[in-house]
Structures are given as C-alpha cells and as structure tokens.
Image 1 (cartoon, one colour):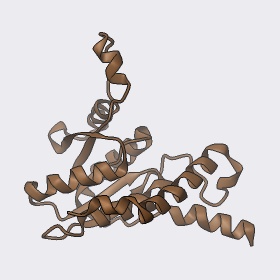
Image 2: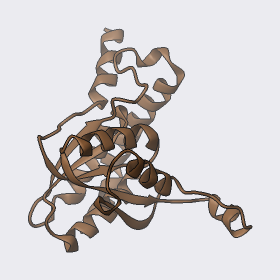
Image 3: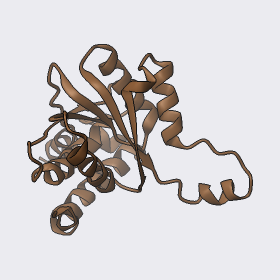
Length: 196
C-alpha cells in the first residue's frame, strides 16, 4: 500500500493537457533548459503561435552586476536558446517583472492578457512534477478574465524525473515533497493573493 501510494503521488503531480494548437506557450522559469527544449519543440511542430516568458528575478545577481560583473539572466538565456532552436525572436514576448514564483508569473501573465487581447488558450511548459501546481495557480489566476483563458500543460520530455520511482533518487524526493507542500500552501494561504 505504501509503495502504491508513493507511486500515485509521483504520477499525480504530472499533468498533461496538450491541445492540437494553442495561442501561446508559457515557459515557466526555474529549470529552464529542459523547459526551453520542450517549448521549442512544440513551437516548431506548430502547436502554438508564440511563446511568453516572464522575466525571472535576478536576486543577488544584481549585486554582482552593480559591481561590474557581466551576468546573463536566465530569462535572456532562455530567449537566446529558443531563437537558436528555431523560434523567431518576434514570436517570443518577455514580460517585465521580478518573478520569484509561479504565482508571480501567473499574475504578470494575467495582467498582460487583460490588455493584450487575442489570446484565449495557453499551454504551460514546465518540469513534469511542477505542472499540477502550476495549472492550479494559473487556472485560479485566470478565472476572472473575460473572455476566459483555457489553460493546458505540457511536461518536458527532457526532464530527469521518475514519476513511479521518485523515492529512489534524492532530487526526485526533494521535488515531490516540495511540490506537495507547495500545493498545500497554495490551497490554504496563497490562493487568496489571486483575487482581483
């Protein structure tokens, strides 16, 4: 029973809902190389018209920049990688922000969609274990938009994540337990921040 429950927890976090075509892909920052590879593949297959990326927080890197050290942000690296993988630069929109979490990314994208128009379907691209929570957050953030925005998701095929044997590898254990706690935190506390 314990092993079955563990397997279900690892698989439950993985969510996939990929339409034949969406208006835009959203690359959620974090472990961006695997997510950029997946999003570029989807774009090149014609699964979406454009890619949205929220500018990730630079945190302490800004201190290095202030001292004259040239730091290339993860956001810039993600954009340059997408272009190198065949996505036209004009099809990538970087939204200004200081995103420190998926919730912040959802709020910035929601505010962008209120004025941008023409986007009524998004596909979130992220690590497999992250998509259950990311979808919850984005659906809650977008539920008041008019017209409504449909949220799909595509887990990266490039991720090194074992959904059925996650307890065998330290990184997977950390990812699964962290996501389960973050889902609980979102349900109990953070979702209140998405009103409005």
